Image (cartoon, rainbow, N blue to C red; front, side):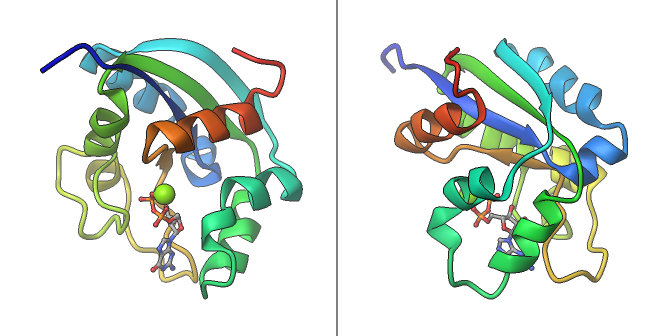
Length: 143
Ligand code: GDP
Ligand code: MG
C-alpha cells in the first residue's frame, strides 16, 4: 500500500456535543493515531448545513436532519493521517446506531431515540472530494 495521507472533516453532532462526548470522540481519533489539524466549536447556520448535506436534499430525513443539526453547537475537526477517511468511518460505525457494532463510536455511545432522524453522534467525510468540500464549509478561513 502506497502513501495516501488524507484529511477528513469530522463533526461531533449536537447530540454528541450536548452529551459531553466531544472529548471522547477526539480521544478515539488520537488513540487511533490520527492528527488533529483544526478544531472549533461552532453553531451551524442553515446555509452551511444545506451545503454540507446537499446530496440528501429531497430525502424524507433531510428536513429533520437540518433541524437536528441546527439544535445546538457542534465540534468540528479536521483530522489527518494515512487513509484517515476510511479509518474514521470505521471508527464511527454504521449510520444506524442500533446496527453499529460495539467498539465503534456510534455502537458504543449511540442508540435509537425514536426520532425522525438518526442521532448518531458523529459525521465523517466519505471521500477525498467530500473532505475538501466540507473542510471549506466548516473552516472557511482555511486550515
Ligand atoms: P453517514 O455518512 O453515515 O453520516 O450517513 P449519510 O450521509 O447517509 O446520512 C447523513 C445523516 O442523515 C446520517 O448520519 C443520519 O444522521 C441521517 N440519516 C441517514 N439516513 C437516514 C435514514 O434512513 N433515516 C433517518 N431517520 N436518518 C437518516
Ligand atoms: Mg454521509
